[in-house]
Image (tube, rainbow, N blue to C red; front, side, top):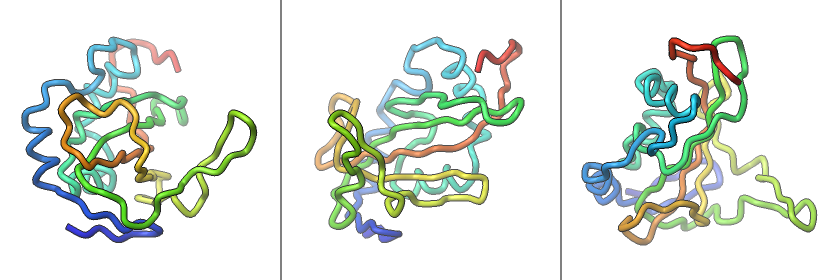
Length: 159
């Protein structure tokens, strides 16, 4: 499948990605146990539809991130999450999202963020991959998403 959106042109192997996720045992929280990961496990079914559809377009199982973290609590009862997923494929265009801002710092150039929904959900695709699962087929890209989820645990939110 050829994916074209914003600055990106991606040659994606959706079936290869989906096949990997069907056999991938790890999922939400990946055994972390922190409040944010436990909440993600319980609230992933409430992921914004635009984010879910974006991930599934590449064959990604939204319940199985390589990394998931809480950026902060935004509104009362809601958390802003940042997740990393992986997809089989290669970027043809849109390869350099980062610009150096200091000796050890960088930022993502604005034009590389894809707006997925009016609620601020965004995505980014990059060649640089962190925490690529063992045995993930190559070539592969990393798909970063930011989105909000409600706090659903029966405990006080620590964020």
